[in-house]
Image (cartoon, rainbow, N blue to C red; front, side):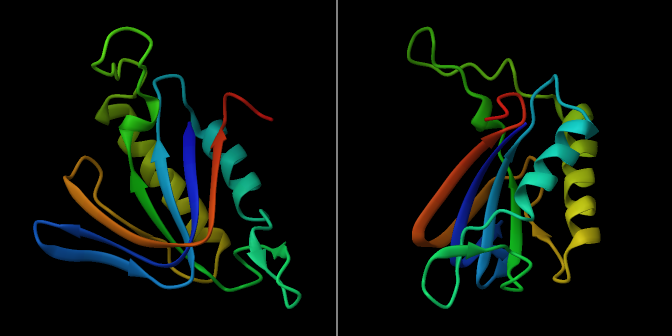
Length: 150
């Protein structure tokens, strides 16, 4: 499971010309699920994500977590995070999980975050054609892969 975490001052997702979700200060999380992923990957990622100190404190040092700043989260499913560009010019998505496997893990990810944060987690729609807008704050962008626990 792979996430791209972006600290944002605002972010939104539009589907079929209708705004589905919008957040202010917080995190935009692009979530890619691969065929080997399980609920253990979700649990590990959430344990890394919630205490991640990437928000500024009073001295403007990245020392605060999403909980400490009462930030919001917007989660967007993105199978292209598992693109392989090893051969040729057309990416292969063979490692990305099929919807029947990915949707339950996507929903589990949202539910588990919701249980641990005071703000309701917002999301796009799995598999939809989405237009995502954001103002990256910092900019701060972090990639975490549950299969590469660095």
